[in-house]
Length: 365
Image (cartoon, rainbow, N blue to C red; front, side):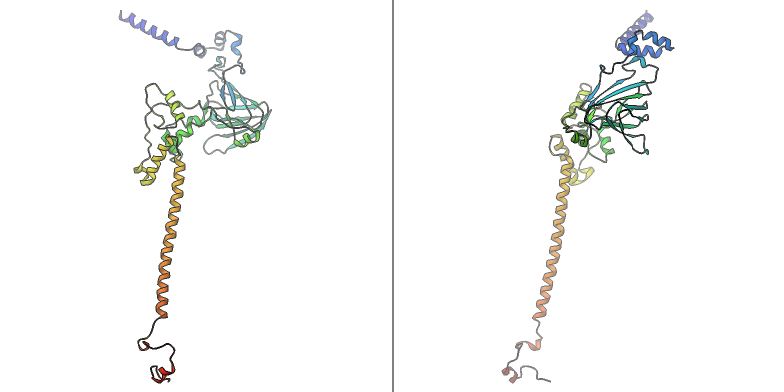
């Protein structure tokens, strides 16, 4: 009785688990379990299963263009074939923002136009930069940070092949600023948690608009770009209370219901930064949270005022010292000018004939 009840429970759990899996994921799982290529082709029982339409697939879009990727996640025929592909449609000055592929090397072929690309393979490696034209290709080793930008004022297309059916993509800016805010702040030289939250809210979705030089050359205004590709937040990487409204909204939407964001252990106060500077830092955080003046502006104003105050104090010190010296010199000069020997007291400086007759002055020797 008990055994049959347990078996029924396990069967029901298995059925429930299968029902929660999408048909695409179920097919991918079956293809991975198939022992031979013949078995996999039997599972892909339609000829159309071997065709992927890049022009009608779901694209990742930004203000500067879009990319469409064919991976094992949306193209099951790639299972066990070790390859994937991405097609990029970059508008004028569109930038495929810095990213990595953790499991694949990429070779990118440019169909038309002019494309600039940069890459850093790892710590210690030099920065590699190239400008390629239609008909050329460039390669990015697995795990390298790289980007591409359309340098022209007309749309371009590139095709990128990757040697892994599940290459992965990691957008550098979005993922980095998705770390705990105090960790990001510390790694940026004590930038400040509020500033981290403000910067995170400004990171545009990929494909983004590129460098200002290109935008000016093509007469394009950057305007407002979508920022929906941010890292989801939970209690471990939550933004601090009082973060910018847009960032807070993102955090609350991605967090689980009922889970209030917990403040991080990074704080600024008078005990940490000392006296006036600590109080100013705390006031700056409050101002930034309320949409007021940001902390860097307040700090800059404090520095300017402090330097001016120190300058005035130095000038005042010089003035006081100079005044004392001038008074002392004047007193000494006055004393020298009016000094009279006791024997000469009551006598005129220039003797008259009467005074000589009275012999008030010393007789000539």
